[in-house]
Every structure is written in C-alpha cells, then in structure tokens.
Image 1 (cartoon, rainbow, N blue to C red):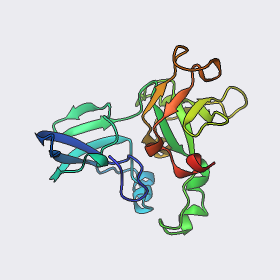
Image 2 (cartoon, one colour):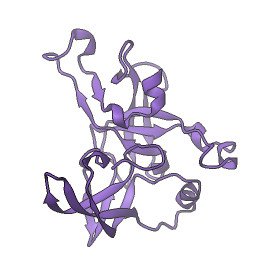
Image 3 (cartoon, helix red, strand yellow):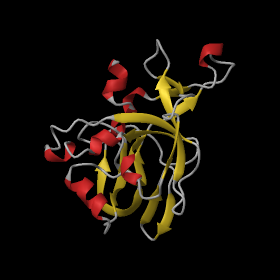
Length: 205
C-alpha cells in the first residue's frame, strides 16, 4: 500500500473482508513492523524510514473505501499467529537505498530535508536468514521511462547483501519481464516497471 510520506508502496495490510466491490470497501488490518532490539533498525525508524522487510504483526483494524491506496499483492510467509515475514523473493524487483542515503551527513538533517537515493535491482535469490541474498542492478533503457535492463559490466552489476543489511530495502516495484513475442529485439529480456512505484528521479531523468 502506498505510504503517506513519498507515495511509495511501503505499507502493508491484511484484508480481512471484502465488504463491497461497487462501491469499493474492504475491512483491513494494518501490519506493523515487529519491535526489534537491533539498534541500527531502531535508529532508522527514528530517522523516519519505514522498514519494508522483516517480521510484521497484525495491528489496528480499519475500513478502506479507496482502491487507489493499494499497489500490489505481497508474497509473504506466516511466521506465527498474526505475524508475517516479508522479504524479497527470487525474480522480484525492488528499489534499494544507496549507501549515501545513510551517510553520516544524512543523519544530521531532518526526515523532511533528507534526500533519498535509490538503485533499482532484480533479486537473483530469495532472502535467507543464514546467507542473505544476491541482487543484480538494473538500469534504464535509453528512450524509455519505465523499461529497465540488467547492468552487465563493472563492479556495480551484481552484489551480495548480508542478512543484516535489510535496511537497504526500500520497497518492491511491480514489474513484468518483456518477452520476444511482445517486444522488439532491443527490449527482449527487459523489465517494464510500474511507474507509480518508481521514485520520481527515475521518471524525470
């Protein structure tokens, strides 16, 4: 679900009941990040960052009458009664914060003034609590705003994230891989990303 701060899909909800389709209304329980003793994650929360990965518990209930607040269905695992695990899966596309977002300079400004910088990545493995996960960086195809391809060369092409580096995950971006039958040879094996989930910098550049 789209967050209030910058409109990216970082909030999670569990639909309890579809009351009506037209007019639209559902009963929903918010999923809140489960309290963590990790000082680094607690610091990020205080800095105003929403944590998108980890364990989330069922929280307050509400009714929603606007379909536009929803982005996509999240692939999650039930960890316990009213607790769900949400981490990137193999083949999913996410926006991740660059290291400069968490620089020492960034910690000295308010949440409103802090500028967030992102990379767009494709996860090559599913998250493991023992090993972390591997990701490949994507770059925009010249001449298109929402079509991306894998970055094939250089040290900034593939990266392994350790299991405790979840603070880099911003949000999942709904994406579909283009096939040869529907796209030109130039766009084969590229990904078309949901523009509503792309940070503004990628749409304007």
